[in-house]
Length: 166
Image (cartoon, rainbow, N blue to C red; front, side):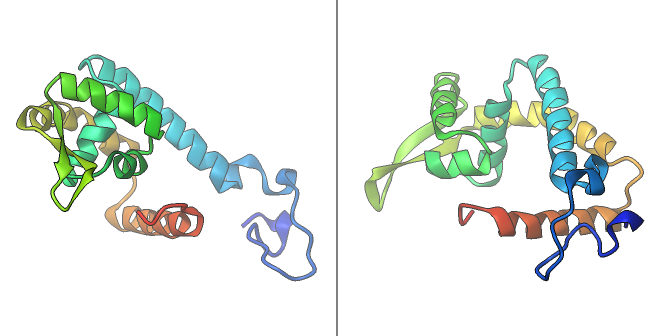
């Protein structure tokens, strides 16, 4: 904890005024650090995906569908952290490539589900080793307990700020 803050960065309630950003400092302001990490990860990943003829939205859609197939476009957009309009265009391209298929939901014909094809699964499996190597490199020097604590904290933060149930 920065001694200048006395009661810490997370001052909750009470009569104390919010600390100024200069008191906290950028290197102790978690949203700033999360943005830097996410931006660097996304930039490095986008560069690596280009070599495989893949875009970030396509990779995200295929990754999510490898884990959970049969999602609606809106659900997929949330899980893939992509705007719905971008996801719709991405799915058009993935469908043209034969990597996904869309079908009507049997219990509600108005709803279309997105499913990954074997070709789509294969395409993702080709890029996964590169992605996993980048992931492992990002957490170099961090042990499994630290990683589990970190992801646990991120889940708590996500619950605090989420707009969707998923």
